[in-house]
Image 1 (tube, helix red, strand yellow):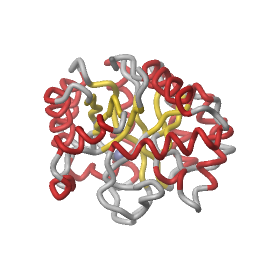
Image 2: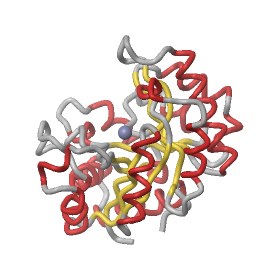
Image 3: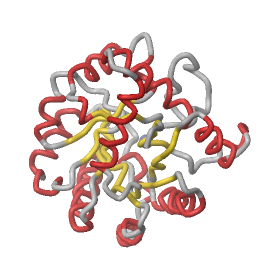
Length: 263
Ligand SMILES: [Zn+2]
């Protein structure tokens, strides 16, 4: 594979209607050399739509899971439906899951930790890696993962990594990879840029997290879309003083290694 890969995006909302709809978005991705996109679920409904997209479009894969901020929608039994989605041939991970202590009205910490644990366990039982979301919960996430290290045998991804360069060492010790999106292209993206230079190349991945976090030179534009992962990777190459083509190959290898169901 010689193209770009967007390992984390959200294509299940209606944000894309105003820019031609999902087919147009995926065509533009292809025209811009983005060969694969991994559409992330954040609750049962979005995980199911992500599966439908993966069935409809060859270049789309997906992950299924409950985002910590979305747990007020969780109903007992939903995890069994997530498990069924995980068995799909194009479901590459359980995600996005984790801890989000950013907003005061986020679900209670105990509820977040409980569902985080149960989804780690699910990933372990299904033999899948995890895609991790962690916001304003650096130490808590690290400690939690250290306590449950045994459930991370298939690895995992710190998606849109936004913590300190120093902490990458601790997350690496857990066998985790790191993906970066728009923020590493921004003028105030110093922290992410330092991380990219510090993390070994075989643990790096590229994403958009669209519809949010549009990279430079289009920062602020909404919605962001997978074709823009190009700006992220090109900027990463610059930071690494690496040839773009070589980096694209490396990122594809990294994605295949972590998300082993990816073809
Ligand atoms: Zn996301």
